[in-house]
Length: 381
Image (cartoon, rainbow, N blue to C red; front, side, top):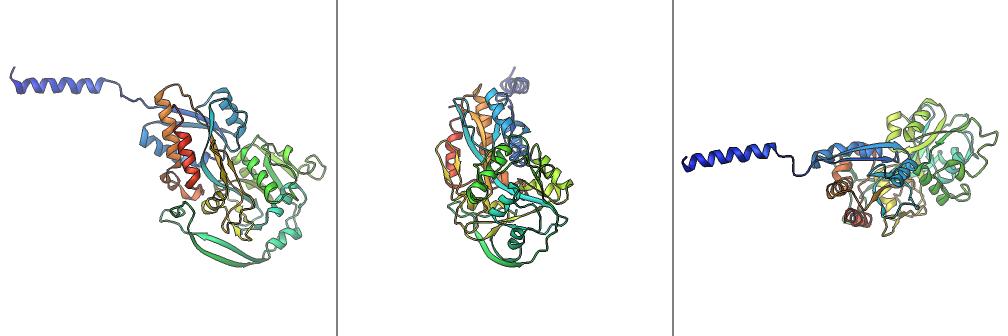
């Protein structure tokens, strides 16, 4: 056999061996469960993650309580909770990789935006404001209001400066007049153990402690400032399990109000309220407003975020939250550890948020991003 023919035969043998051999790095199938709040961004980004890495993610819901339980029982690899899991197993870390607004959403027969102060929101959900034409709601919605508008790129994502703060386009002033119906307000809360609810009620207590007198809690009955079983509340204040369920219930119930991540309002045809902040502006639940709000937060080295509900930032949206991935630093093998690191890094990447800007998740930047990356690096190391 001449040299040329030998080389051809050898090349064919090598090619056959390569095709027959298994991939050097097999695809990893990640699983997880928990908070419904981050579900929209997880669903929007998991295809891109799969395209970039070949790995997949299957994420079940159930609420933050389910995410903490799954973490405790080690029944999932990437579980989420919107509030810290202070009783987590040793080695489990909190990684706040996603952030978005909790929207106050309602069904009163039109899409005209309401303007509500934190004290008014606290009164509505706390049972002391029971009619849509209550003087406090009327006062909030018959006045001049001012709002900060943020710059967006061509994809509809908020632009940020080098420090990670959202860029302001302009500040607008509107004179609003709203005739409100003389109808009973039907409040819908989360009946499950909900981190979204824990954050929402913590914000009410932080921004309007004179009305929402109890500390925030994932369980509505534990944080409700009055008597939830009072005769006046029975049938008027009701619960549903999960963000999708409360939004769907509100869509079916005229004169109702609830809260969930903003995209659930859009999916269910509900109107969304703008909320007054400490600077006196009335901000809609946007990614820019959440970025401004996060700029006043304190971030511990363990990833747990403490929010400032008295932030003076003129564009802050007070019901902004982060959701924590509860991750065990010890994974079963190096491939799984890398797949988890890649997933969480992908969720932090601007291209993830740009996949679907209308759901109003914000790209995490600045000090919070730096801490996220340090925590991610601990997985498997």
